[in-house]
Image (cartoon, rainbow, N blue to C red; front, side, top):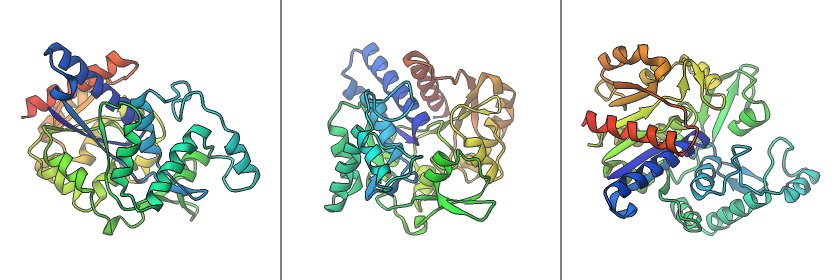
Length: 330
């Protein structure tokens, strides 16, 4: 089965890890080699990327890379395990990087390699491939676009700042008026992303931030159309449970675009394919089961399932529920 996931950072990485675990278990149950049974491709948000100290930083890609490779720091929930920060301290002492954004030494190695390749003219998709070769990931990471579409936040006090400053430094504490992906109007989807969506047997939208993770992917001209045109069923997973975000500050982003922090409201924000949207199916939490019938009547086949991804078993179970719903849609 060809499975394509649209994903952002930490929450998306956890979900993709669950998809991979489900694929492994399903292949074992069929006595098949894992790579022969399932092909997992992940279209990654690049809207969080930015330039810092002359280096191209890619938080969502790196969250996926570290999580799938087992290099992630599970205690902090981000970055590399067994990390040190000697270089970061020097950079901050020289005033090259801000104190509110720390780059670990191992993490810097990835950023330097990425930047060196980009400066040499290597396409971003090839950079992803090279970075992914170091460890067995069990999935192929694909940039949504080769173009830079960094996210900027316009706030109520008249500021315009990069998303990373708003998110990391201010913890989304300054209310946002709108989000801008600079240059997205002329950006093009990467050919690999279009192929992954067109050739998929199922397309899954991870429980990532709908505004700043999935939004920039679907906002790239032609990519939303590709999702709408694919013959594969498209199933999304809610990033909120009982009106509360699972992780991060997605509620601040949703409020800025006038969407309630509610699983049903987010599904209607994505909208059914029959209503010029992208969804065929939607998984929400058991706590939100009261919304199942209404969404199904809106043309989005919806099921209430356990959404908490606490470990490999619960993450694989969620992925399995998404695949099962996709099969029912088909």
